[in-house]
Length: 90
Image (cartoon, rainbow, N blue to C red):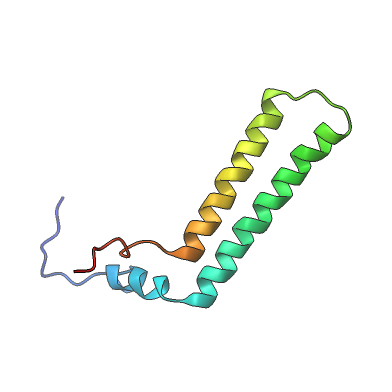
């Protein structure tokens, strides 16, 4: 069932403007991006600990390192907030 467009959104729903509002919150971006970077460091050090103890480099260890790299990249993207900054300056 489709709803007519004249019906207002429910009280608890998030509008698209709210997502843009939180994108400009520096403290929110630093806190969440920093948490992702710290999580990446923790996952990387856990994988590195296994390798340092002389364990074999298994596919699980490689997956942990790849996951840590993806967490770190995500943290940098959250902090840098590149959305909307790719417009050419004329």
